[in-house]
Image 1: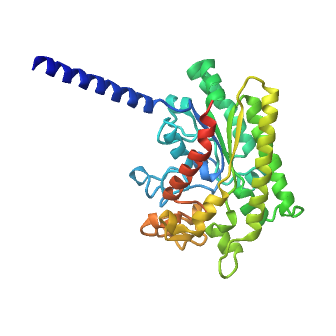
Image 2 (image 1 turned 60 degrees about the vertical axis):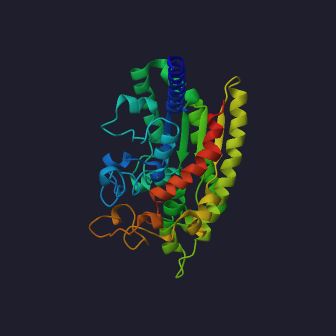
Image 3 (image 1 turned 120 degrees about the vertical axis):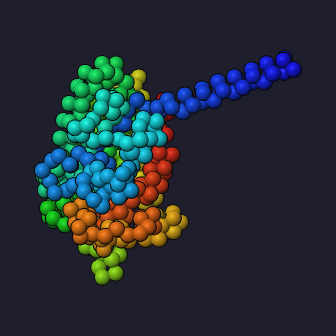
Length: 362
């Protein structure tokens, strides 16, 4: 009996040790940091402290966030970079770089420099009075110095070589600068898409020159099918705007080619390093969500949850004048421009499984 008891105890110890080892393995981050640049899709609150009307730090934004708190995220809850940071094992929420509450741990494991309303076209940020993509690179250099001060040179080197660098912009260029503002009258659809590719590629090139080795460019969605563009450019029937989508398709094709070319060039220029430049094409997946919402658990994909769902976004989506749909989970879009937390979760799973995993491979 004593021997049998001892054997059972030994089995329990072995099983417990195995479970502990598995737990430790799960808790080990897949990447040392997630660094993000871009627009409102990935802005967790950088616009809160700058002089612009493009903000989301008031209700009903944050409707389904922790304690229903509006953080500056253009969503009812979490945004894509929060989900990616969580799946990487880094943290549950990716903070804005400009947050006055940024902790040392958050600093070391990654931040977002994104600013709602910005774009690759230099005109876009100026028209919206937000942080330009060029300024985000300047902030990144300042950030590196802060990381160096907190974690040393080795931490900076690890971040640059193994960290995930994600970029998401372009939609505001098309929807606002090109169509709404008509600020580029000398460009047709093809030439404007080429202009965006030029600036986006230059941004990636600057990151690679700075030492980034794992870079992901998130492609443009079918911007002509978001509720606000349906309302403004889709006619009485609120169809998808073909012009918007033509530019998005042309940009995606051009940027995918440029990313492949730049990856080959980077490997020649930096032999011995494992530079990976991945273009994340979300166009077809998101279009399918919009056209077949019920297949993804939604009943409404042409209107936002906030207010009438036709035009309300940012300052127009506020608790004073805009009601909130019920249940939010039925809606693909939170406001007339940005998806709901549920939609982001589904989209992020697709992006992570198809593209982010490629960046994690050595």
